[in-house]
Image 1: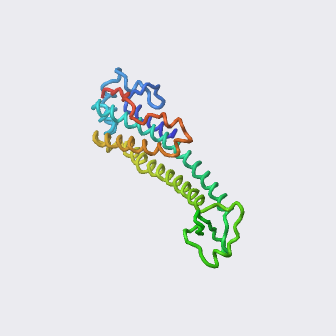
Image 2 (image 1 turned 120 degrees about the vertical axis):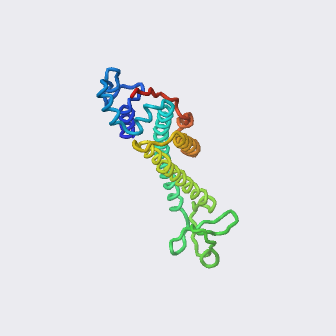
Image 3 (image 1 turned 45 degrees about the horizontal axis):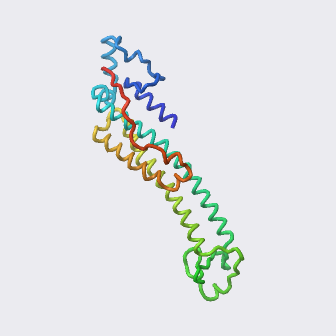
Length: 235
């Protein structure tokens, strides 16, 4: 995340876009009104297509900064949610393993569970009858089939939450950052709008699951795009 922020800052500074912070990589004198005509021409030749587009189109520059800010915010929120989802999955798996350790077993080690109606089910969902059922020795604290199913569903849901977050991080946020960081083939304004919608549409539902119960601060987060703060430089 720090490397991504540094890269973002460098791109803004190279484009001469003020974000209300002191430049860390590029001297502000490069973009002052005292730049000679020769140096101005040299700089214009060195600018990428993205920098030229942002310098010549204030509306595009403002939207680009909005989308980059939204992306950075979404990346931070998603990473926090992933970390919480990993903890939730680990805890669910531990609880499930503890339940399995208390279960009755067949002679081959297959765990079995009895439901409220007295039927016996294996951990693989098979109905156990006949001699196999009669040979089972039931521990006093053996979990029921209903308890087993609830525990398994908790693990499955926790794994699904984590997988969804990882997919969003890679397919939406990662692809968006790659696209925004292409200096010679910058996205169009329509494409920027689409990227913004994908980021916002993806963040909201992914932050509404069980992860939020463990991270109440995410409940108060604002997932809308921040107002533009770009000041477009003169070329």
